[in-house]
Length: 86
Image 1: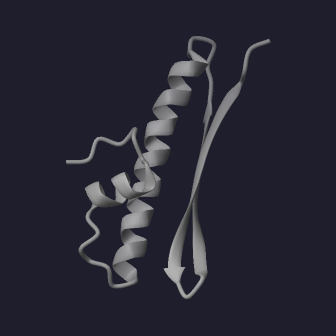
Image 2: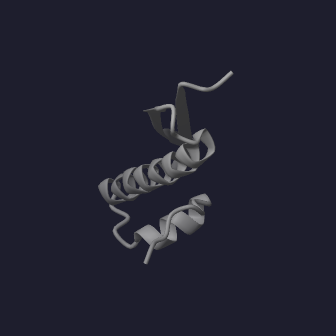
């Protein structure tokens, strides 16, 4: 049986201080054609999800006044390995 769609999601919990935290969540779904390889599509989608969660995390840190948190540092801190950050 062949898959008709692939869904990749990622959530990251961020400590906001005073024993509080927030959860950042990104989910993407791709519909597959007959010619698509589901493993390749899943890997590409995982990269896009990690890029999106990284952008979301960077904005979250900036909103809270932590402007020194650049994308490379955020990716390393949260273990986002599929994203190529300069």
